[in-house]
Length: 386
Image (cartoon, rainbow, N blue to C red; front, side, top):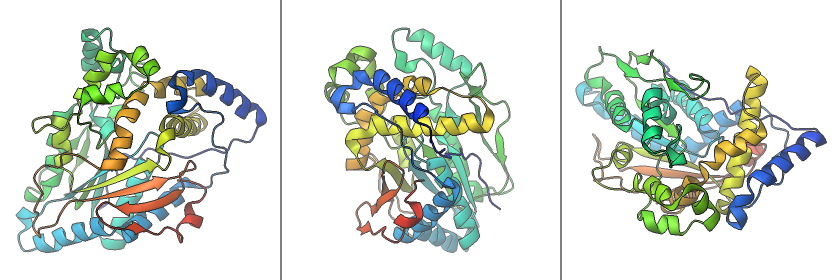
């Protein structure tokens, strides 16, 4: 059986009119001015003619498993080994990290489909977004921190129900030991309370154990070794806008400590895939561009959504975290994986970094600790973007 609990569509729309590009350029340039040269102002959105991003995601899913077969081998090995003792069988938990609008949820859904269709592996895709705190708790959190805009609304560290995430991951990973039971996976309704969002009263119910659990999240894998140093490296306009104490609080929440829930999420991961812009110096601009394209697709599909200016304002709140941790994750990999896991067949944890161009084309696939995978054969397939 195939499970895809949540897969956000990241369709990219072509932008053909001069008027649209000119208006967007003005909005972006004005709103991103405070990020100075460290963040590079947006001048114009990516306007390539993008065709069928779902097909491109499916191609990347298959190529990813060929270029870096560790995930597939890990899942197959566990299933084979566990056949003798079904109760010891444990799902492979995969972390999939990538900026907003990078296509991670679409990729996750196609990884699930590919593993099922090609290798008869049962998979499930869930999202970090579905583990936000309920609306009442988010409201209380904002009230308790009236001068900290980073905690006003969902999204940033401190706004997730990490104990629930840890509990759910463990239940999904060990579902084979009690296959007749069900696992409840929360769902988050982002449209509730006029867009503020709330946890849905009806969770998704998983009835059949899975071989692979894919958890995607925009800040999955983020960490920093020293909160004070991380904030000191930010430019003055950003510190002035959000407040030094607030930024230090944000960074402290992702410090890799043995007792933190955030670190314990990382220790649950058997495999990690990181989608990252190839130009790390341009992360704020690229994320704004991708998120704008994503929102335009939503507006076209549903008739409602944020304007370009609203998207810029929305992303601005996330920029400090990207500057603090996205580069660190890309350059240093996931920190605090805990004690090296020895599974049923003694497999090590593995990580893969997928570098993307501004049109989401694949530049390279690197298995961390291994060698680069050539993407020459894949480039024509994904050259229009993911």
